[in-house]
Image (cartoon, rainbow, N blue to C red; front, side):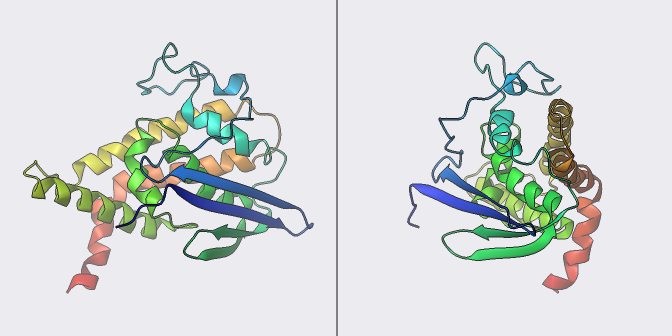
Length: 230
């Protein structure tokens, strides 16, 4: 399979007022880590020890900045005065196709934030990197559960083929999302420090709903997919 040097996602927010916000997101195709905008200077908000996540394994000596916040701060400054439920048309362009959705700012922003969070270098969120490689904008909870389970089990199958122990019960996936829930709580605490309206915080809360729901419902939800394999 041929690998490009970079992955590109372009998010365009088309507001009814005529305003447009565009974000060109570049990831290293091999590491799936974001290529940061070097001209951006993060604020105190991005300091690692500012409302550091309770389960963060990083130290400020080696990582003075929170990798997730440093990248989120770059985009969220444009949304801090926008109301979360405002309707907007969001276009997502990739090399293969273009997605379009008439949705709320909160949902569109949450979809884009997912890329930034997973690809920033956070050791906990990095466990979801395979899902970023095949990013699905505006995914529902059901779609997210299907993709998360499928992606995780493919990884376990690869381990199995290499002679390594495989977690077919997906206990590791459930634990990962419990850890992500803690990260989301820490990030929400950080971003409450931003003055303005609520789009950025509500987008994070929407992502947290996925993190909370998935550990509690994944095994029950998988039963809903049984008919697909009969």
